[in-house]
Image (cartoon, one colour):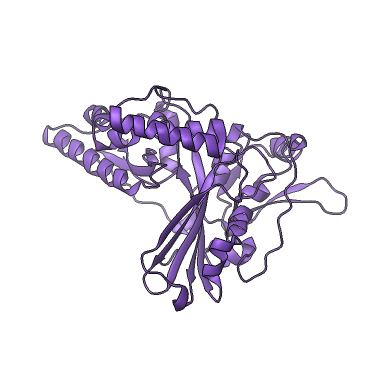
Length: 382
């Protein structure tokens, strides 16, 4: 089914392909756009859409939480929104700088729904859809250079999410408008294919920069001091920035990239997750079915493992195969048959394009590439 692509040559190309974009990742590496910025940081967001009992529906209700069922060293939180006619979106975000390789973001999400304050919402309800996606969390200090010869990064490709405010659409739109305005000015001046230095210089002094700068220390404080102390200090730092325009902490560093935070399995305790009940909690494969994901099974695998031997020696032998747990779609398995050496199996047709493997693999040995024909999950009303 191969068909040659069409070449479209633009004077300036704006890259807005979302978190951990395939093109953005290559551009950042090729032009060294991140050489003066801090490590990018990420979370994984898992989400379900439910149709609930009308008697339990509360139009416009918004609920947020952080912490439970995670321990106080592991960052994450939830959202639950009532909207339209008896629909509820429920989700859980888990920061990808967690340490225990036995942790499963999907299972933590399922456990979250069993909390008495949450479970009652879903009594007599029907699950409609499921999905997962990585989220940028690095903020102000992790934003790379946005302009490069012939183009610029915008939106989540640039990492413009305000983590404590749980929002990024506003900055995505503002960055797109700003980049377009600078591109138009350059074209009017007869320029093309050069670097939009004015865009690069403008964003930090804009509403985007002001928005991100005020909250720049929340993520590092949360990561360093845990949920209770870190969130408290982060809130205090946000108020200091809001009231006085500065932080006594300056701009904190993130410490490590997310792939480097896992501890060896021998240093960690296994986590025994309860079996799903099929009513409130579910397994991954039945969840993937509700993501309406489709990949032709005979197409080339779009998840590339650079070094199979390294995957066995490190990801399996040292870290006990965390890919089988951090993936929210059951893509990765370590299979042992008849006493043979464990074999790494990739069920690429299950992939919901969350990009977690590209971020969390401890050796950066897995490269998420684009599958053929725009295939993947379909998210109605998500």
